[in-house]
Image (cartoon, rainbow, N blue to C red; front, side, top):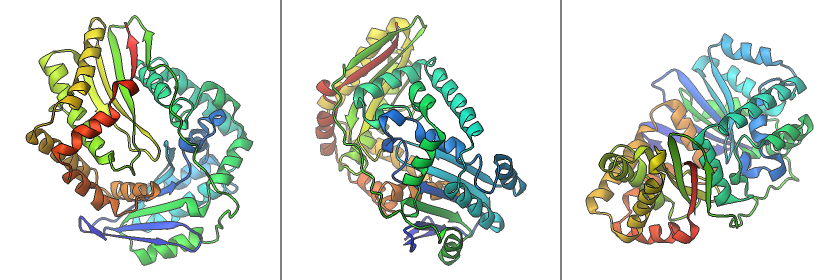
Amino acid sequence: MKNNHNYIQKTILKNGITLIVIENPTTDIIAGRIFCRNAGSLWEATSQAGIFHLLASVISKGTRNLSSLEIAEKVESIGAALGTDTSSDYFLVSMKTITEDFPEILTLASEILRYPSFPESEIELEKKITLQNILSQKEQPFNLAFTQLREMIYGEHPYGFSVLGTEDTVNNLTADDLKKCHQRHFTPDNLIISLAGKINLARSIELVENIFGDWQQNPNETLQLKPYHLSSRSNFHKIEQDNQQSIIMMGYLAPEITHPDYPILKLLTTYLGNGLSSRLFVELREKRGLAYDVSAFYPTRLDKSQFVLYMGTASQNTEVGQEGLYNEIKRLREEKLSMEELEVAKSKLLGQYALGKQTNAEFAQIFGWYETLGLGIEYDDIFPQLITNITLEDIQPVANQYLQDSSLCVSIVGK
C-alpha cells in the first residue's frame, strides 16, 4: 500500500504480533507506537475503573532488571522519547529516536511491557497524583458537565467512567490487581507495533523478532466486551454553581466506528461545531452573542460513542443558550443542508484529516490505531472515500435517527 510517498506494509509474526511499517527514508528518525488492544478503560470492571490509567503511570517505573531512574537515564542518554498512556479503547507505548538508536529504545520498550515490577512506592505515589487529578476535575465546570453527561448516556458501562477512575476505585487498587491485569491483557497477540521512518520491513521484522520473538501467547484467555445496556437514568441534570459562566452540554448515544452511519455523523460534527465558520459558532456566537465557547464532538470509539454539543455562556443566558443549542439540533433534523454547506464541511474534514498525517509519529499513530480498532490499514483510503460519497439525502435520516428528543441528555453546570 502506498500513501503520500510512503510505503506501508503489514505482517503478522509467529507469536501473533502485528507489525506495520511505514517506510519514510527522507528523515533519519523513527517513530514507533506499540498498541495493546483489548486494553483500556473499555475492558475495566466497574470496581476497577482507572486500573489501566494507573498501570500506564507505573509500568515504566521499574522492571525486573531496571529501576525507575535507570529507565529514565537510558532514555535521556540517547535523547530519545518514550512514553506510556491509555485511552478508552487501547493501551499505548510511544517512542521516537534517531534511526541508529532505535534498537535500544525498542529493547527498553519490550522490557517495560513484558517485565514491569510495579514497585509499591511508585504505585502509592501515582495513586496520590491520580486522586489529586480526580479532585481537580471536580472543580472545573467543563469536566463536571461532561462527567454528568457521560454518566447519563452510559450508566454503568465502562465508558460512563473517567479514564482516571473514581476516588474509591483508585484507592482500592493494589499491586496484585495491576499484576493480574498486566498478565491477562499484555500478550503478543494483542500487540500492534507500528513503525514509521527510515526503516524497511525486513529490518523491522528482524528487530521485532529478536526483541519480542520469545514472548509466547496466553492460549487460555479470551476477553469479552461488556454489552451495552441503555441507561435508565434521568436525561437532565444540573449542578447549581454561582459562577459568571454556565456550561451547557447536550448529548446522544451514537454509533461506533464500524457502523455505516459513522462517517455521516463525523461530517455533521464538523459542520456543526468545527471552527469559526461552523454553524454553532456563526449562529450562536457571531449572530446572537450567546457563547464564549461553542463546539461539537463525536469521539471515535470501538463501542457506542456519544454525539455532543456544548456551549459556555454568561450565567444570565443559560436558558436562552440551552434553547439556542437545542434549536440548532432541531433544525438539523428538519431542514436540509445546502449543497454548498455540505461541500464546505467535506473539504474542512478531509483537509484536517490530511493535515493530521505529516510526521512519522502521526503516521505510526493513525495506521496502528486503525489496526487496533479492527479496521485495518486500508481504512486510511476508505475513510476519505466514505466522506466524499456522502450525499444531501444521506444526512437528514441519520440526524433524525440519532438526534431524537427521546434520547437527548442535557447537562448544565451554572446558574
